[in-house]
Length: 129
Image 1 (spheres, helix red, strand yellow):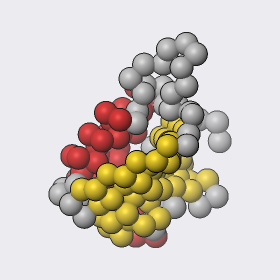
Image 2: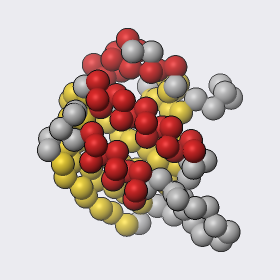
Image 3: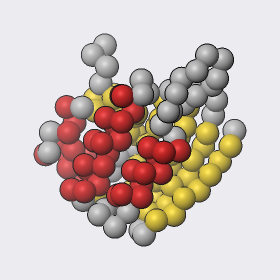
């Protein structure tokens, strides 16, 4: 299990990498100040580029937002863009442990239609509920 840490303005990411799953613990705020770097880091270093035979690649990404105090509109767009990138690579992206404030924001913007609430967690809707 490898672990990496990335720090951006107002946001820190701690990655727990397992053979086919990566859990990303987010600490801080996902805002215009950090969104581009946040997106680029996950897109370029976590979402699989290829799924070759016999090579263990991440097929599940979990964004743990339990320590995220605020998400602005740019941050919401970034979460959606990451979800889209993951789908293109046949990778599941789940968002878990949302604060009530962030959960309400997803609901108000109707982004919760892309993420399904399951036992207090949000995960990518796969149509098998």
